[in-house]
Length: 60
Image (cartoon, rainbow, N blue to C red):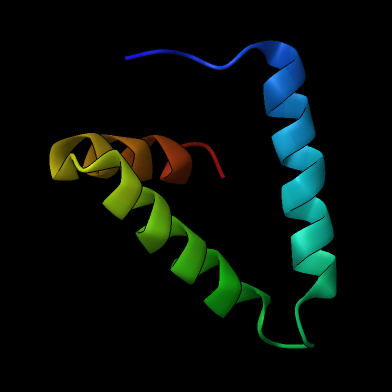
């Protein structure tokens, strides 16, 4: 599996923040869930998605 460069991650962070800001009020959570499911489908590995979910929940 390839990894993203730091500059790519920073750009994606900025893009994600902008998308959250564009979401209608009260709909950003729905947009994030839709994004997560689309990314999971693109990744095509349920076990990897579950590991990422666990990682994302840690230390909130």
